[in-house]
Image (cartoon, rainbow, N blue to C red):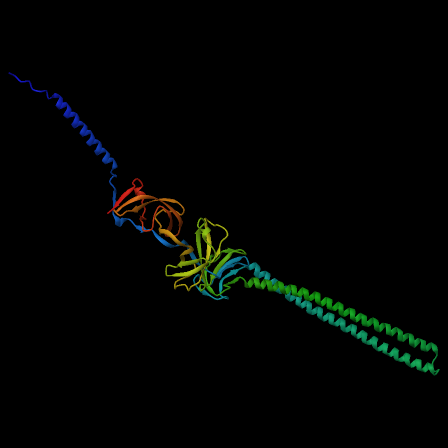
Length: 416
């Protein structure tokens, strides 16, 4: 007798359903787990990057700018007359005294004018001498006439007095007495007239002398001017110092006002910094400055700030308050660091590449696991090599300071 077996078809279907459900669950779990995993981090050699640590404390804001050393006493020598450069007696770099002739100009027209002025002066002086002789002679003639009239006047007075006495004794007639008194009166008037004539003549003579002397002085002044102009063709240094440049050549024609030379005193120099106009707003008078002469660093202070912008920069003059090192000379290229301000108790870090003041930055912060993750950071005030951290980082955080533009498409790197 056959015994029927139970059908296993349903059991197989059930098992397939169970295994399928389990497989789907496993697959879903794997997918979910993979989705929670971070992508593999980019591996970077730690020796190829520079890092810095955020610290809290004092931060010194500084500004750095290029510049040159220039003399405080710097004299440009300009031409007083037009002429041709005839000779250059001293070359740049030479030590000169105030009276040292740097170069000589030649002006034939001025030489001729000087000779003419001298001749005119001599002629005027000769005329003045001749006039003085003639005027003195005329005064002597008038004095001689006055002496004669005075003698006749005194004689007439004496005769009138004598006739008056004789008339009192009846020895002469009244007519003779009246005639004597009339003569005395006439000679008195003539004597007065001659005295007035002498006074007028002396006044006239003095006026003529003054006029002639003024004419002579005018000729003398013209000659002195011409002679001074002629002497000015020998161009002198004007101050003790070092001849910096002579921007003319022999045979070159120059006009009044043209620059002929520059002389400077090398013992007293100042610094001129060229600061970008966007940064110059933070510079103020009396701020401390460190001047790097490439042969030593000396201290200084901001002494003057140019009121106008030239070619995108503002010129800042710095008074040097310490002795300059050997080798410092005019036109030497330098670098100045201006101390803008000191900030107390702020978070700051060495300035990352391309970091700008008062901006948002994306920086890689190194974690304890050796991986660096991109972090948004707010930056504040900046200095030459430091920047203030406003938010996004805490003290002690380690940040990559190198250029990270090559990793703009990743948010995490691993430092090996």
